[in-house]
Length: 373
Image (tube, rainbow, N blue to C red; front, side):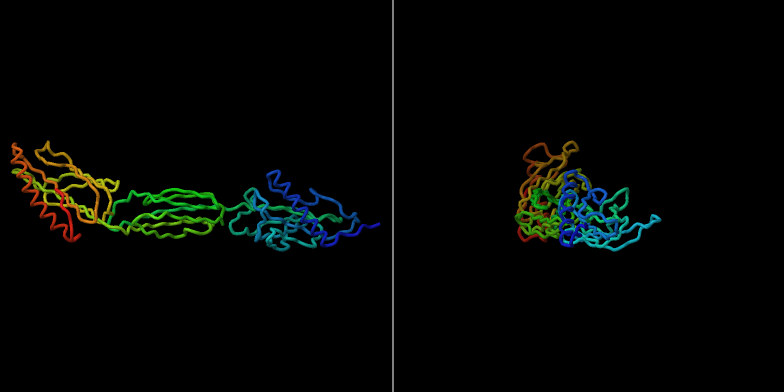
């Protein structure tokens, strides 16, 4: 007596149950797996020796998970007696990660992924896209289930910082605070001008948001601060533009005394906003540092030339930049008189002259300025 054949709804349900069972088995072993009648088989109908078409279900998961992968293109191939393969049809996995090939005649087949979904990579075996073989037996049998996996493609997110301080060309040493939320994980960090922070190995398609904490006297613009990580990676660029007050620092050199060399160069070292710069000046020359953000700390030091016969009352000066021009005049007296009174009088005379000269040089920067001797 013949047993009744499995009807389509029951067959579909059985296939889904088998897919879940095989996926669970694969997850427990930690390896990708495929199943066919030779591996997992339960006779639900007595074999009659008749050749009967069968269905083959492809189930696609993200590697290491039970998350279905839709949109994967798979081509089904049937093996010929001479060992070649002929394409039968190309299928696309649906929202459940499944593709169903129905009414397959007995024979040897294999699935092969021809296009992975965006953000995923196909499984590779021996340098080639992996084949998932199975066979349809001649006798009646259960539906065939093949499990395949896609690994997530990974890329990087880079955050960059640029600080625009207008006329101030030296690098700003200020650090700006950032918060990046990547796939629900929060990261905090700081960046200075010209620095960057890279987060690597992020699964493609992961949502991210990068924000910068407000900074006094700066306006912030950004590009790509919110989005999803694409296959080629992405850069979130932040630019801070200084909108506060500016000041100007002018260093002037004056040399006097019988026998002084007017062409001699004197070396200075300026530390401004944490940055150091050296320069030289001759008699009557000035060095201007324009567009310094108000509040910037500075110090200017002249090298010691006492061993060469030059005397100066104060070699190092410092302070805080304000919304004005600060003019520092350095006077060197060559062959200074031994008497302190005569030296002071001569230095003051040259200093007054230099102050007037420096004032004329700085008038074009601001209408109000302060001269420091």
